[in-house]
Image 1 (cartoon, rainbow, N blue to C red):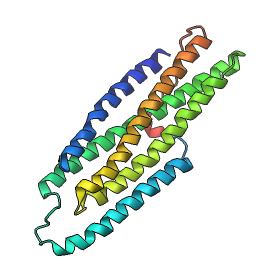
Image 2 (image 1 turned 90 degrees about the horizontal axis):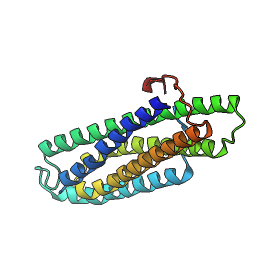
Image 3 (image 1 turned 90 degrees about the vertical axis):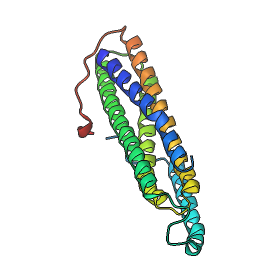
Length: 210
């Protein structure tokens, strides 16, 4: 259980690191878990993609009237900076998803031990773990969509408006990661309560194994 707590501390620090980076994107533009995604999240992603497509269609007409200098588009230098910041943020978020997935695996192993060795009621603990797994699956879907969407946004002739849609995705990802973290903290605390504070050495699982 101590190892799980140390793992949670590392994840907490990673969440702290990724939260402010989205502000850089806003400033620059003018300033293995479940594979199945919930219908609600999928609908939200499709809606945002449709909105982005409409923006691209609208600005396409404007682009024809602009000069070959690329008026309204991000300069090559700014585009490089924004791309660099986004890639770093995306890498950190993916790494955090991997770490949380590893922690879920360890917690599930601990639950199996408690279930086999005791007659404790694990209904609430299992429910919270499943909720965390669903949120992680949703987060992976949104993050994948964001990575694909970014390529369209960065080349847009109206980047400010396009970035607003991407920012909604990033905000959802941050909220999900924080929610998953809170759920797992709660689960570990409940497991300690059920076992009387008995320490447990969780099996080592590398992110690459997820």
